[in-house]
Length: 270
Length: 230
Image 1 (cartoon, each protein chain N blue to C red):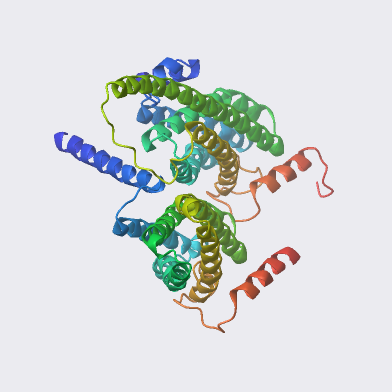
Image 2 (image 1 turned 90 degrees about the horizontal axis):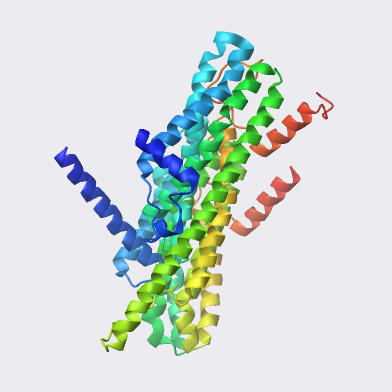
């Protein structure tokens, strides 16, 4: 655990993602160690989120607290499960050099950043939970906190991807120089098999990979938001009995909009 | 401990081997036809099985529906291909391009495999969508969207695989367009004939839906119209 926290610390400081360290084209992190840290941080934030119910209704909100504590890590896990396979497949289709393992490590690292930010804001959320009784304010506050941490995590993802590309290019350049030397010694090399996507230059592939990651980031955000909606309630409306999940209806975006309207007393129905 | 490590090693070894095959497939490398067909079959059957879980989200999970859909989605891809292939072969021969046929056929099979893999990789989105709505027509339209994305991707790959052929003879481009139009046109009607894939939880599970053998295109337009109007 201490080792894994050290790993997270190095990630946060950007030591793991220095260009020199990415030489082999692989992010050198212990994904399973980070996964445990992610789980713990998620549980912590979940507890902070669920504390609103305790502050409102006392001990009768304990089931909600327990459910919320478990649901936050579940939210991230399920969002990853939904979005990861297609990320990998589309990446492979455009000829990315990221293998399954390195894609997974990259995403896990980004999620670790995300949860580090999220849980660092958890105490603030807990403070507001105790000191306010406006349910809609808490909803919006949590949406904002999740968005901020999501954006930072995704920014990390794109930067690291960029650095991986730079590091690999440097490696390739060195490899090509060696190859040119051997070729000068007149050793015939077998031509590479011409694949469907091999016609593109490396640069085109990198652009495509970046585009795919950009699209993925948007998809990850949308899926995460809707997944949060599917897994609701997280906070627990004060006048509703505890249920593990609510019925299927509406969607996240509509709900945020109506919460905003209610918070600001815009809607006629109040 | 020792055995566990070894099993772990073998597992990661086979995962890596599988991944290498998958990657070379997606890069358009020439794999044995049987292997490509295997990917096409497993990928589409996997999507089919998940596609049939719609009832499960309202408490009526039907293993029969999952099984039926797992059979029907590969059948859809396979039989549509089989229906269109003779016409395509004849068109190729008539244009004097029969010599390129093996390459063209390989490209078609490969694109089918890729279609199936993309479908399988998108299947979790379908599950999330099922978990988000209890509106049956919306679930069907979402599946339509997923199939459209997968088809679009596969078509893109097919186009790239065809690039050397087109460079050799520009008529391959016309043939390719013809193939896509023919395949798409047939597949939509065939999918409609094979329905239900998603399985309306309010109706009994059946391999085929009883009812008139009407036309898919008319029904789809009506469905979109209803969704817009309501």
